Image (cartoon, rainbow, N blue to C red; front, side, top):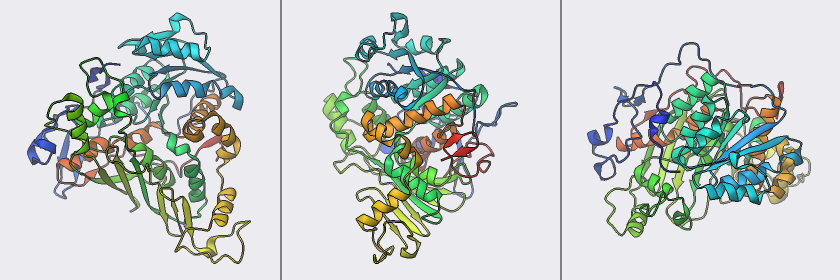
Amino acid sequence: MKKTNYILAISAVAMLAWTGCHQTGSCHDNTLVNPQFQTQWTRGADGVIRTAVPARPEGQEHALALKTPKLDVVRVAFVGLGMRGPGAVERFTHMKDVGLNVQIVALCDHEKSRADNINKKHNLNLPDSAIYYGEDGYKALCERNDVDLVYIATDWNHHVPVALYAMENGKHAAIEVPSAMSMQDCWDLINTSERTRKHCIQLENCCYDFFELNTLNMAQKGLFGEVIRGEGAYIHDLSGFWKHYWKTGKEDKLGWRLEYNKLHRGDVYATHGLGPVCQAMDIHRGDRLTTLVAMDTDSFVGKALVEEATGKPCENFQNGDHTTTLLRTAKGKVIEIQHNVMTPQPYSRKYQLTGTLGFANKYPTQGYAIEGKKVKVEGVPNHENLNAHGFLPEAAKNALVAEYQHPLIKEIGEKAKKVGGHGGMDFIMDYRVVYCLQNGLPMDLDVYDIAEWCCLAELGAISMINGSAPVEIPDFTRGYWNHLKGYKMYKTENTWY
């Protein structure tokens, strides 16, 4: 899809031009390239930068633990069939194997051939009237009266416009990550979900990876004591992928993702690392993010990629090769998030939890360190000299994982591995979306998760252009962050995993 005018995504929130870059002169090349980031902000006497928080419109209620009517059959339409969409369609054809009722009713992509190919590949037998394409094809799809869920896997620029149009037309919206790219996006999605009472779901698959689910279960059962610090990241050298991102035409030399990194500073892909940590820390379910500070390196690799692709000097590349963001919570906990898609290094999402009684770590070594006297697990030899100065021995770790295996993995883990999608976590994620819709249950991930995990892009950029100044993270629930007590994945209305 070509870039959509962001007028589609503008709500009644008053916005002023972002001039901080020019005030400080600390922006990369002293220029703010893209005006999409235009949030009004002020800096207080305490040095903390604060952004404008729109009041909740009169008569509008929060969407925490939002429940909607049960659906006997979940009728789904897919928008975006490039890198992520085809795999999602494939996974949905397996929902019947785990007892869920799904009907794929429509497909949409900017390129008609992509939708046609998916229709044929999976023998969906959709009529021509169910195939949509072109710049505005998603609008007609969202206007259908036989769609319950719009599954959005477009380029980042189209995530919010499609999601807003879906909810405005009475559909639930499930959005690939990152689901929102600016503070304006965050507030638009929140207000629309609250007003329409439709789910706005972030498709964050890493929350459903096997290690993360098991570790979440351990944290919720108190194995680590009080979790006081977390780390997450998206460190993934994309050198083999840049040339394959969708381009608008012959004149487009960069592709949408490299162009986005060229135009935007801040952590533009924070959700893989931040999501699982926020769940373990009960963010907006008993605690909340309050402040961030961010810094980045200059662009070395990114700038060179643009010059190689265009054959021209790159005077301005906003996104630093490596970005680091520190966040603080209301309960005095700390989270560190990193982003690097430019330099050669092993893939890592880090995922680390530090607790008062134990420790969990995923990359580069998967392991747990727990005080020996706290380890009372069947299968762990009594003669093991267990202590928290090193990772548990392999036998002890395996016994621990077996005892604390997350119920979701017990239920559909083996099936998920067979279906695939990043080792099965994609299928577990999709399963939960459909399961909750069919049973009228609150979603595992809500619209406030979207805002909290995606705000690092613009708020981080504001911090960076002001010498890594502290920036307040708004309470996106607008007063209800302590309304829910602990993170839950619902099994029934009154029970959860």
